[in-house]
Amino acid sequence: MPELPEVETIRTGLEPLLVGRKIAGVTCHRPDLRYLLPDLDPLVGDTVNGVRRRSKYLLFELADSKQVLVWHLGMTGQFHVLPCQTKAGAHEHVRFDLDDGQSLRYRDARRFGYAGLLPTTGLQMHAWFKNLGPEPLSDTFNDEHLLAICIGRKAPIKNIIMDAAAVVGIGNIYASESLFRAGIHPARAAGRISATRLYNLTFCIKQILTEAIAAGGSTISDFVHADGKPGYFAHSFQVYGRTGENCFLCGETIRRITQAGRSTFYCPACQH
DNA sequence: CTGAAGACCTGCCTGC
DNA sequence: TGCAGGCAGGTCTTCA
Image (tube, rainbow, N blue to C red; front, top):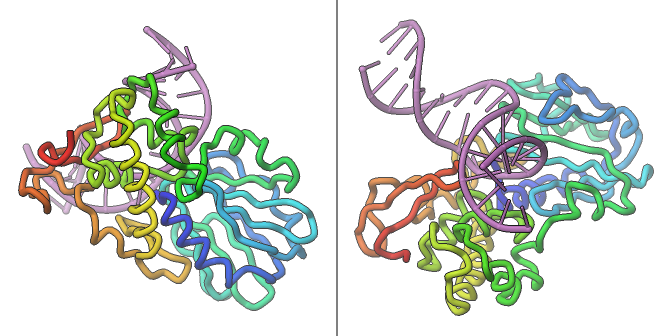
C-alpha cells in the first residue's frame, strides 16, 4: 500500500511517540503474515532508540539488544499508537505495550506485510537490503545513475523506475505521476529515452516525492497516519485513478493500461 | 542476464 | 439482495 512518502510520513509520526519508550509487553494475535513473524518476546524490557526508514522498510532500533525490528507494511499494513486499554480492531495482528500507557498496534487486512528481528551489524547485507538501489531523495540518485540504469534496457521506463534495484520507494502511484510530469510515455523502452529527458525524469521524481511527503502522503483507501489522520497528496493526482477523465493540462482523456500486471495511467497527448 | 507472469491474501466496488 | 468478477498502493518466485 504505502510508497516511500507514506512510509516516511508514518515514520515521522511514530518517532516522537516511540523513541525513549520501553516496551512493556508484546502480544501477537496472528503471526502468519506474508512470512511467519519472529518471536517478539525478547523485545520486552528493551527501549526504542530510533525509528528510521530504508526504502519502504521501517526500522525500529533497539537500545539493549543491538537489534533492529525491520517492518514492511506490504499493501495494507498500518501502525497506530493507541491507549493500552483500547480494544483490538479488525485485522490487528500485533501490539506492543509501552511504558507510558500507550501501545503500538499493527493492522494488516491482506497480511502482505512482514517483519524480522535482525542484528544491527551487517544489516545492509541482509537479503532484504543488499540489492536495494539508492534512496530517490539522496544525492546518489542523480542524472548519471538513472542514465546508467536505463542504457540498453528494453523494458518500459515505468517498470524500471518501480524496480527497487534501480531506485527504491517508487510504487505504482508515483511511477505514473512522475512520468506524467516528465512527459514520458510509461511504455517507452527505457533505453530509447534521451539523456536530457531522463535527467528531467530524475528531477520530477524527486519533486513529486518531496511534495507528497510535505502533504503527508496520499490516502487512497486505507492509508492513515499514526494518529489516524489522512494524507492529502491524493488531491494532487494528475493521472493516477483518473481513467476517462480529462487531462488537467490539455483536456485529452486519461488512459489506463496494464504493465507488469499493474495499472498505469497516462495522458496520450502529454506523454510520448 | 532480461523481462513477463503468477503467487501471496482479503476487502470492496461494480454489474448482472 | 446475492453473487461473480475485477480491482487494490508490494515483493518474491518461476519461467521463457
